[in-house]
Length: 145
Image (cartoon, rainbow, N blue to C red; front, top):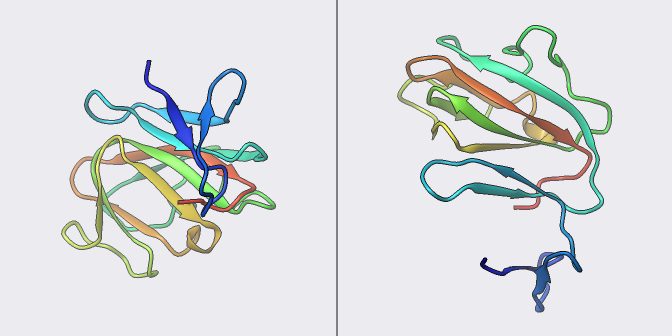
């Protein structure tokens, strides 16, 4: 099994091995191909909520596209969202402009969608063909990319 080395904080010069003696909270999402995508969440995080939204032929925000019974606004204290596009390719724009089926950042099935607090209501999504579904969690920590 390969060894996972991390930097605990951005800019650290030293790397630390992750394992039973040095745990690290992670969420693993199955990505495309043989290599899974790994989302590393800082140890002092709290999951504040879960949502699912379906992206169709009309552009909208994650809350405007929320599936029945899901969140229609961010949970109190949420600073980030991390989810996975499970079906259908989509396009997204984070500048509050509606994407089209040919304009905007392409998000493929299996890709991780990260949104900061400022992007929750600003990012717009549209399907490029069949509907896309994103499922994920809100966290009380900012995105650390």
